[in-house]
Amino acid sequence: MSSFWHDAGSKFNPISSIDYLPRNFLEDIQLHRLQNMVKRVYDNVPFYRQRMDENKVKPEHIQSLKDIKYLPFTVKTDLRDTYPFGLFASPMNEVVRLHASSGTTGKPIVVAYTKEDIDVWCNVMVRSLSACNVDRGDIVQNAYGYGLFTGGLGLHYGVETLGATVIPISGGNTDRQIMILKDFNVTVICCTPSYFVHIIERANELGIDLKSSPLRVGIFGAEPWSEAMRQYIEREANIKAFDIYGLSEIIGPGVGNECICQNGLHIFEDHFYPEIIDPETLEPLPDGEEGELVFTTLSKKAMPMIRYRTRDITSFYNEPCPCGRTIRKIRKISRRSDDMFIIRGVNVFPSQIETALLTVEGSTPHYQIKLTREHGLDQMEIQIEVTKEMFSDRISEMEKLQNKFVQSIERIINIRANVRLVEPHSIPRSEGKAKRVVDLRKI
Image 1 (cartoon, one colour):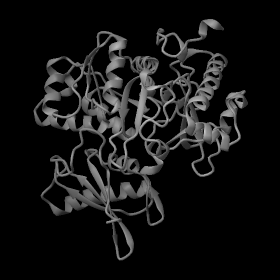
Image 2 (image 1 turned 180 degrees about the vertical axis):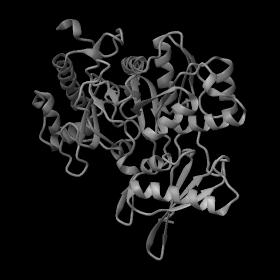
Image 3 (image 1 turned 90 degrees about the horizontal axis):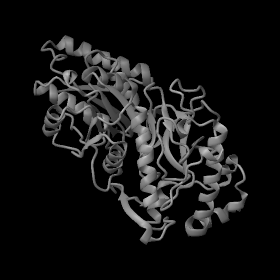
Image 4 (image 1 turned 135 degrees about the horizontal axis):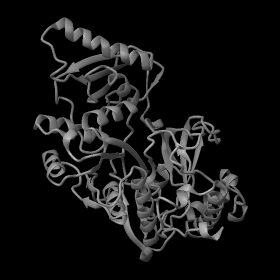
């Protein structure tokens, strides 16, 4: 069995190694790393030692993977409450990099990496890129933001480690993005899906046909996106669109990735142990049942996370993947529990609206949901951009189009929404995560 063991940060062939291990070997690795990690946080992080003492659990109590249920959960507010360095398990002289969230609400979330953590990050990013058929010889345009955001540098180091060519263009300046994409013969692009939709739209305006370019792969993440959005992107750009999953609190991009089968995200669970729990009872759920995704880092040194609640809603796949990988797979995440809003007693997610409007022929995924309160009653208006091709100067035709959207949305969310058709380019574009919901009820 020793030939299957890999210490965190070791380099190995991403195609033939740990992603294809027999489950019993993988679970031995997971348990070994879990036990070491629990002892590390208990010895070095007062926050976790106090939480574990409150739960009456000691490191030696973790004798099997099932014993993870005795460990405390971690939530985002814990990271803010211990800002900036309160969850570090390594001394600062071993920390080689710091990242942080945008900090739009209160203090930012700070995350830390040792040299070994960076090696693990490169490792899982190589496995992510390989899963969607990216290899040496590819030219990768990285339009994720560089800086404190983990997306840009996470992808960058992964591409370099793989041996492909990376263009560190970062986000924004869409005309320049399109010029570089065309002139540099880019084969792979990485950005948020909503930004790539904007790139498609702008390329069409400039008379540039992305379908005839060498571009063949898009790696999109950092925001939930629907299967309908994937179909739109693949149709309009003639590429394969893959979902990449990650979060800064765990490592950044590279926690999981779709393979060429495009039917779920493989989790690199030798480094990130996944659970699905009921968000209300906090009890583990059986495979196939939808719930909240929770991660425990198994090899992170600078800032380990125990049972971190992501708020992302998904479920495990039961059946094996045709690609042959044995690591677990989750369904594509199209919503978060904290993205949900309630209208007239009905739970609504932006991804449901996106799916509904993209079923209408010729529509684009440019929309915004505005929530207001009138006379004590909540109101929802969905503003949808009309393309030039869909526009008509006949009122009856526009009313017919509006009704198509109303009916499509009602079929999915079971309530009748107010739909307002708006002019092209009237909804703000985003170079990062799209702002889908404007909630004015608290103002």
